Image (spheres, one colour):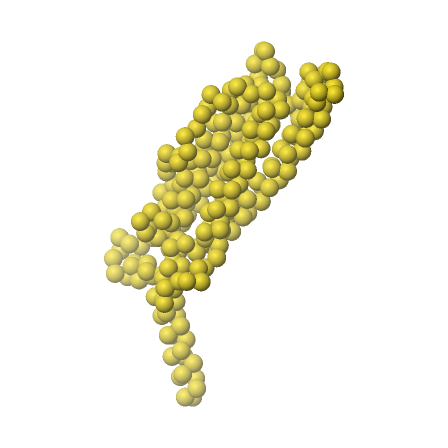
Length: 232
C-alpha cells in the first residue's frame, strides 16, 4: 500500500513538472481570455516562434504562385506558343497557391491568425517574363531549391529538442514542435523532393535536345514541349 502511494505521488510530480515546462499550461485557468489552442513553439516570445516562420513561408508560397503564373503566361503568347511549358508552370502555380491556403488553415488550427507578411526577400517579377525554354527550367529548379532549403531550415529548428535547455526544459517550449515538423514533412518537404527531381531531369534532357551539336534547336524545344504537355 505504501509503495502504491509513493507511485501515485511520483506520478503527480511528473505530471506537474511536465506542465511546468509549458508556460501556457495554466493560463486558461487563470484568465478565460487566454484559453486557446496555442502551445509549444507557437507561443509568443519576441517573434522567435514557428508561427512567424510559417507566416513568412506562406507569403513566399503566394509569391511563388504568382511567379509561376507569370512564367506560364509568358509561354502562352503568339510569339512563343509552348503549351507544355505553360501547363507545367500553371501546375506549379496552382500547387503553391494550394499549399499557401493549407498552411494558413494549419496556423489557424494551432491558434494563430495566418495572415500574410512582407517577404524578407525582394522579388523581381520582370526577370520571370524574360525567359526561354531552358533558362526557365533552370530558374524554376533554383527557385524550388531555395524554397526547399527554407522549409528544411524551419524543420531543423523545430524537430529536435535542444540539449542546452533550461533546468525546467522551458527553452524547448519556444522551438520544439513535432506537430508542425510532421506537417512540413507530409505536406511540403516530401513533395518538394519529387519536384526537384523532375525539374533537374527536364533541364538535362532539354539541354541534350538543344545542344550545339544539334542544328535544329527549335525542333528540339518543340518536341520537348510536346512531351511536357503529355507528361505533366
